Image 1 (cartoon, rainbow, N blue to C red):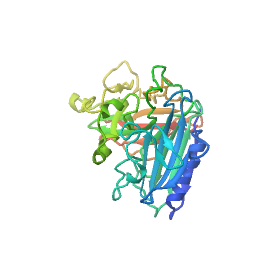
Image 2: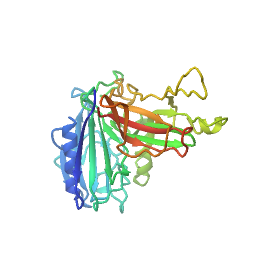
Image 3: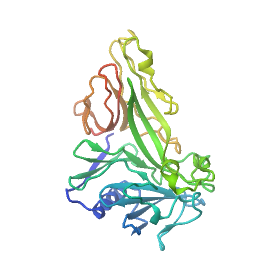
Image 4: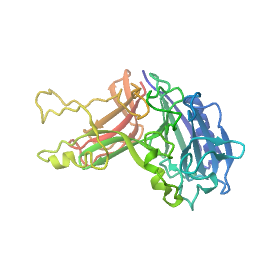
Length: 348
């Protein structure tokens, strides 16, 4: 199976209102909503749009509200909360426990201090593209990525679909699913890493919220409630430099949580391989909230042959039969013995 790919493009000179429009279209097309749950401007004229996702209508906290903020044409961010009052345009519940700050307190001189920033510093002077990749193997899985000029790009992100099969031990009578997930590709020495993060939390968040005991300080919001860098899953490709274990293992597990090593075989180290074996891996665990694996048409891959990968590059396994597009990447500084990590979507 291959993904359905759709690109929503805004021409240079686009506005913040138009930006909210392509998010709206992408989320509707991904089956996340039929319309924004709430839509308004805060006191700083930041455009606020609320996405309601109902994971279990029978539970006290079965719904999660993803509050998107669009500051003009420079940045977008998201916060989670456990309830939302669409009449008064405010979250419900207790600060810190159910939401972080009120919408009027989410902007600070050009920095989205109180939301998890969607990683792209935008510029309305050039075309902007929001790409949606929806799996053909599991239509509940969609990934989104923003880019400008082909090189300025966001981290891919996803939001757990309302029909996601959650782990049975998650008690949604006690807390919410923090289902905004982004993907981070990076290198350290000869190693490549693909990490999946849960960047946004409140104390009501299942799995992570208890780490925020007592925290309400707005000034610390960026690093505590948001962008906390909880890596739920990490995949690693090791280096292959001759006689240099230190460079080949550098920082594995150090500050990146435990990593799963991809099944790579190099002939120059193990002659049992008749040729190098560097597979595109799919069907991997990817979320702390579900046992459903990463869909078969999304893949994680470590590239060694060169280090000149660019966004939307195609990797051809069999021409016209199996082809994959680059959604996220990081070029390793070393060719052949350094792993360049990629997140791919199968387009053929």
